[in-house]
Image 1 (cartoon, rainbow, N blue to C red):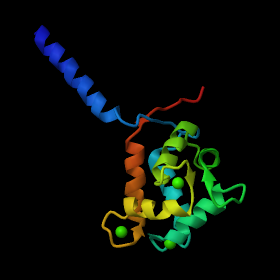
Image 2 (image 1 turned 30 degrees about the vertical axis):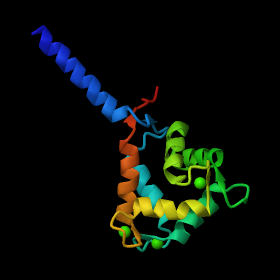
Image 3 (image 1 turned 135 degrees about the horizontal axis):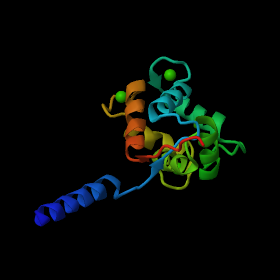
Length: 154
Ligand SMILES: [Ca+2]
Ligand SMILES: [Ca+2]
Ligand SMILES: [Ca+2]
């Protein structure tokens, strides 16, 4: 009996390590928006002409028009985090996690050079196009990597 409990505890610990071991992050949203709501809004913002395809220029346009406040054509982590938080109300910690998903060159800024890397990550059927579905799956995976916390309004 005692043996069983020990093994169960060990299994739980192992599962927790697999689930949260690598890039631990916590998703919380100031407006209590669920991931689905935020992802749909982000997708609508990204697919600007609403044709179901997210093109390179739509990605770049979204980055530059929404996030690049100082007009340098590159977006710093701080610019991105602040704007993502203001637009979608996700916590700043979570916005920073999303930034690392978009910053495919890993240089701490978002810009033209991140688009091709981002595209190859999101275009899962490798047909050269990012569909709304592919983009939704990409973001859903990112949100699913994070633990969800619900801050209840006081
Ligand atoms: Ca489009
Ligand atoms: Ca980059
Ligand atoms: Ca595709």
